[in-house]
Length: 295
Ligand code: SF4
Ligand code: SF4
Image 1 (cartoon, rainbow, N blue to C red):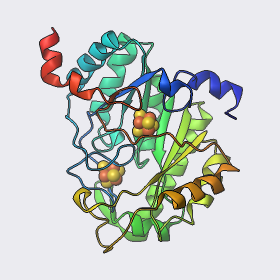
Image 2: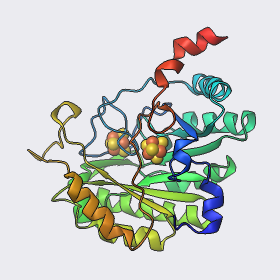
Image 3: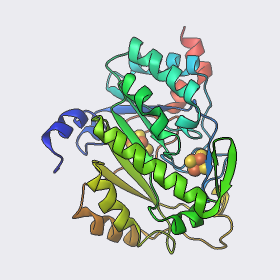
Image 4: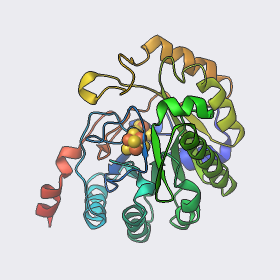
């Protein structure tokens, strides 16, 4: 593990950021964020956001009050639960009231739990102050490209200042917001992980460049995830027959980025309502009806 000391001190008990910790510490996601402000070609809105989750999964949408109750119940049952993340089912920062109501209550009522959030980055710059206020020390940004021409092949549109914007212009704005958000977070000492979805023939070669740039701007970890393009998850629409990378293509890209920065290789693309150690999902023990029944 070649993370610098000050980062290691922050992540030693974070299951996602430390290879050793993921055997001992648990995390949970609460799905409080239904809306999204962009469209990714690989997204099927029926399911969880692919910023952080394996597509094809439907999580139980909770209100902030339900999410707070669930988190406190899980923390009381699983003492190794160190991390609470909001990762969907849409984009957490496109639902700022719901996301921040949840963080605000938990930072007051359960100050020992680390809070993290994942986002496509479009609304990130305007949220950085609020994130810092709630002591969020980990943010995951999904950055699939730094070139708008490539971006236009991944994102058909964004919703920006009350308007739908398409094509290269949309990709330009999204990329600018992601890079600005990344710089603002690292300037405040908030840890940033970058996720990228590897899409063969579209951004696979380009991701090595993305890796260099985000590292130079202070991201501490890069997590390249494979596009999962199975028919039942919804195809990469507009592109017939788009496939995901093979295991060896994924590994080759991860190896080629490794020289530049830490690569995360044990991310499980957990569901937006996952509970437990990384290899397990105890979410079904903590569904809403069961939590209501615990009282
Ligand atoms: Fe779907 Fe997530 Fe992309 Fe939004 S950011 S379109 S929810 S994959
Ligand atoms: Fe950790 Fe990846 Fe699961 Fe998020 S999706 S909780 S980063 S293993």
